[in-house]
Image (cartoon, rainbow, N blue to C red):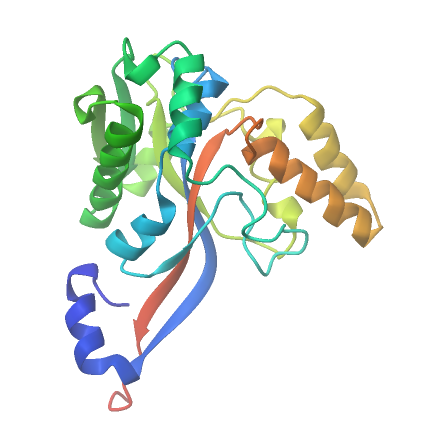
Length: 257
């Protein structure tokens, strides 16, 4: 792997000995759905739609990724096409949703906490998001208290009760098997979100169970598209905001034995 700070110089000197490898890991910012202000679906939609994923990948990740507006990436059975489902970057929609939530131009918006992985790469990501939310929603970075913890600490902290848990946090998912059930089923079904996101069971979970049990591949594909839209579309729940699938640059030098 190549450290972010070394990537530009490395590509200039060793471009022909560098490969880019997609690993199917999708990263996102999760919301505690039982804790204000992200208990309001319009706030969740607003924060997701205010994030410019394409520029983030180009500038911050230096091309190491692919923008995601839903959960399961290409290569997973049942994943919808990458550019057809989900809100995506839409500043006007974001501003309207935040106003619908009662915070026009972020007026009256409360202080929130955002917990991230440790490391400079995560801090760069968070700072870019803060700038997006300031520009597109009017939410000053001062409204967002940022803390970084190790992965193990983050997993423990995000299980705490609402009073102690952060409002939002960075996380990611890599598949155990190449099927949409391992994404929307094993991660987002209400029985699996009780510890962190804490979404309530509804008709989306019934669709997840139907898709899981069906033996008809075409029915499953159609259901999973509907499920992803129900989670991440303009009228969706948005339990988290998808960011990107990782496609990392890796050094592959011929002179190393």
